[in-house]
Image (cartoon, rainbow, N blue to C red; front, side, top):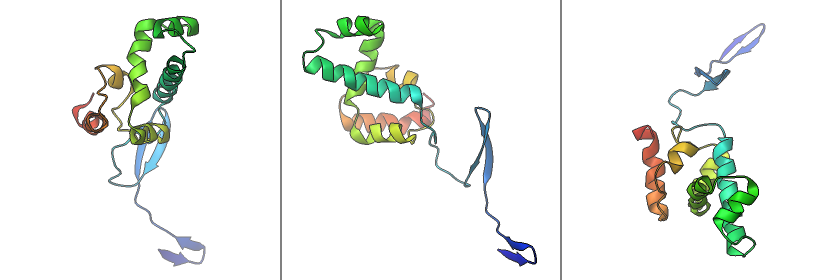
Length: 132
């Protein structure tokens, strides 16, 4: 900090990055997280949970019927439905934009999602390193 007649000058180290047309200021050595909410991923998690609830309570006879009623392809719906059973801490990461940068909806549904929460956490942890 430097004091002068015109006020106080404070020096803060930052890294300037450009992302999707915006200029971001980040601290040096910031963790490799998305830092933004992936709306497609959030929507897919919310939709899958809604579908799972509607199927569980009998409101919908089948996933195929539910998908058709909402204008989705039943194959797409089948790929999204497992997201309803993501570990709660992973859902929190997605909702707050703290998921690994490389973790997108496409990466998450590219392969069958493990139902074991520890296996899901491992998938999240390795996603950024493997470049899924």
